[in-house]
Structure formats: C-alpha cells, structure tokens
Length: 97
Image 1 (tube, rainbow, N blue to C red):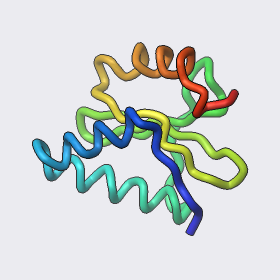
Image 2: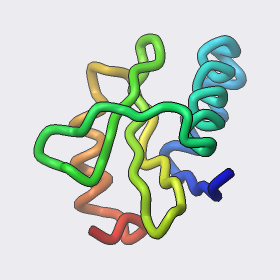
Image 3: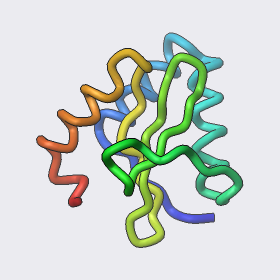
C-alpha cells in the first residue's frame, strides 16, 4: 500500500465531514484506501493532466501521484471544487507542479 499525504484543505474538510456528515466521511476514507491500494482510478482533470478526480456523493476528491506518494489535493463540494482547486494551486507550495 502506498503512502499518502493530504493538503491542509483536504484534511480540514475531512475532519469537518467526520463531525457533520459521517457517512460521506467514511465513503471518502474508503476511496482513499482504495486509491492507496491502486484498486481504482479517477478521471483526468481537464487542463491539469497530472491530477485526477473522483466523485463521492456531492463531493469531489482531486488527487495526484508524486514519486509514488498519493497526494490528496482537495476535497470539496462539486459546486466550488474547481475554483478552490485553482486557488490552491496558485497559493500552495505543497503542490510543486
């Protein structure tokens, strides 16, 4: 099973969901485990070929692989995920692209 990292945004969102939407948080954790085991693959993100997205209910999980480490870049609702993702890319040193 590969190692993984979460950005601050992804970790914060996952903790918030664990308090307020337990079923969604569990589904997201299951998806992360499946990604770590290489059991699933997401759809490529348009305009950002290094990143992939997976739909989990109302939420999107955007991730990439960096040197065989699974990087969970963002977990956000579908309506705002892409704006938040672009903001994260512009303002984060965690994602060196």
